[in-house]
Image 1: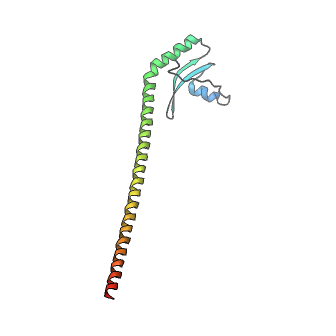
Image 2: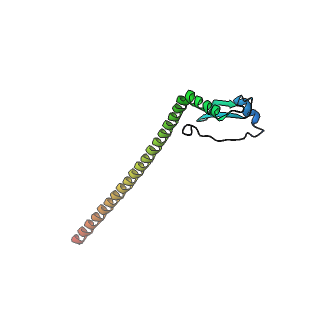
Image 3: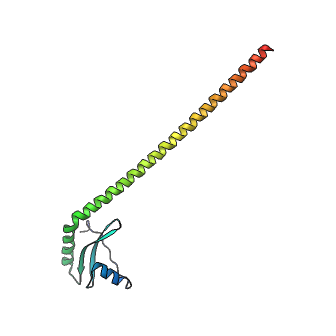
Amino acid sequence: MRQHFCYGGSHCHPARMPWNSCRLSVSTYPCIALLAFSGQRTKLVALVQGRVRAPELLAALRRALDEQGMLLMAEQLEQEERDTSRRLLAEQNAEYEASLAADQQREVRRQDEARRAEEAAQQQAAEEARKRAEEEA
């Protein structure tokens, strides 16, 4: 059972107990509710009310797992797919950002090389003009 259920206990605060009772249709205490969480939704899967022995509780949980297991597995698979999609999108965004940064670095280097080539051409033209001026003088 431990491989299928995550369990924990809680005591309902008296101020919230009527709301919980009404929402879960509880009429007898103690009450054990098996809830399935899917995104923002919460679904009541099983409700065991009153004093029950361990074998009866275990049977109720197994019955709930048998009845709802496929649905719970499908919801778990959907969650895993959403997580995978989210992770893939994050990886793609990171790769895009890295590619964009590399492109920007290449553009900066190209502009630097063009500026240096222009400066070299201007220096060479100035040197040639100076040599011509010396030859004419």
